[in-house]
Length: 406
Ligand SMILES: *Cc1c(COP(=O)(O)O)cnc(C)c1O
Image 1 (cartoon, rainbow, N blue to C red):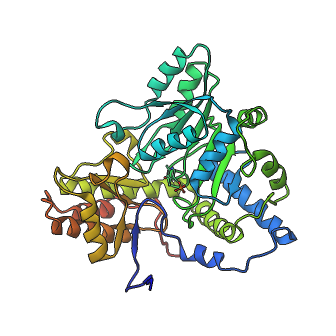
Image 2 (cartoon, rainbow, N blue to C red):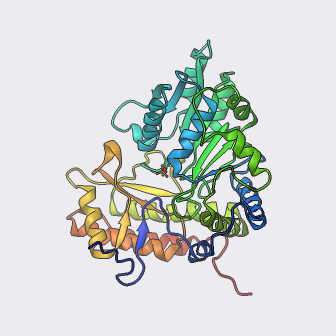
Image 3 (cartoon, rainbow, N blue to C red):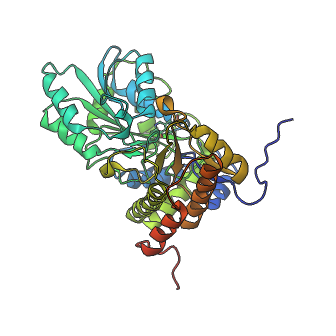
């Protein structure tokens, strides 16, 4: 018999970088009865969430919501804007960028992977200067799209998307800019319009604090124009019918009604707190977690402080220590889930998520689990990480307190 014990005692510490902990308020909103998706009430919900998500993406463009995981939104972005054999530049920051490249190959696109040389390639963000150089060399404008991951969830690196846009403009190149902000959105600053992104791609189960199951595309006017010429087959993912139907608050196919209730609630929370407050909160949590990792004497996967992720931190293991063995101890003994190393860094590092419904004390609990688990696994720690994080959180008050007297 399959036994799923959701509550051995106390709350499970879901510290993977997505799916992230979902606020009870959002879970409760999702438990409301499913309504007629062609009825009058639905349109009000549809228009509300589409409007809210424009604020979250910082855009005036239409936001599209698919009933799929993030991977579906990658595919939607490509099949709507590209044609078979199109040359696309895929910047490899880590495992998710590599998976996106694999998807592009399956779609019969001709991909060119740009990556830093050497074993430390996955420790840095996107080098916009290299993109600029490559685009300048592409005199025939054969490259149709530049694809970059905003927050590389496999490593904990948040790349500078505005710099990529400046690079494309400096090269005077017409390539479209496709950005995966599946884990970046609503945890790190993101500006679809200001940054000149042509297609933004996101998902529900990371910064938006929702369960997995819905994903997003936001096009630019140029991307919409490209979608009218692009010839990769598209049916379910086609933007045209979606944009048309969404104008009245409806979808061409059955939308994920209950997840949209959750999305409405999550947007209310994010927008009531204010996105800038939410971003600052994540930055501060990330600082506390990094203080712990540094005190342990371990290396952070991201080697460039300018692009440390506010959403997750990758912790590298000393030579000879299996990161998954450490994770297993922490899970079994302390009921805390940490992110596994992905792709070529599997076993070499684990990831601590600091996103979703969390706070200082939750993170301190998770760090305590890590510290105990590391010691149990025989890792020699230089010092007390939990103490360093406590010192950080107590000496750096959040810009906006979580609670204030009325
Ligand atoms: C989670 C994630 C994905 C994959 O999304 P799925 O929902 O698993 O399909 C892609 N890119 C990034 C950066 C992610 O964090």
